[in-house]
Image (tube, rainbow, N blue to C red; front, side, top):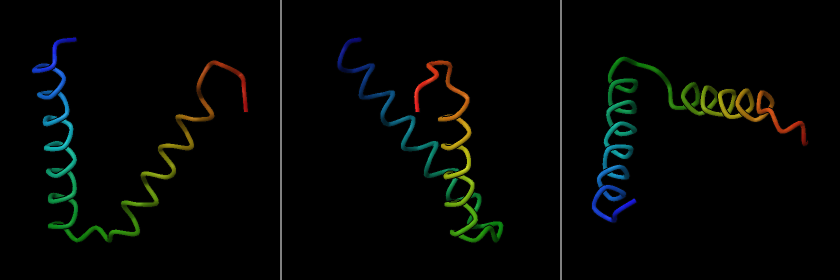
Length: 54
């Protein structure tokens, strides 16, 4: 992947994360709730992978 596309992809991910945080916090979602949702999503992804390793 060429460097400009890679950097553009990183910028897009950072902007999406910032927009998500801004929208959530603006609507009164507590930071602890966001952190808990992120941990649960990471655990679900970890245990639903198809490599059958722990």
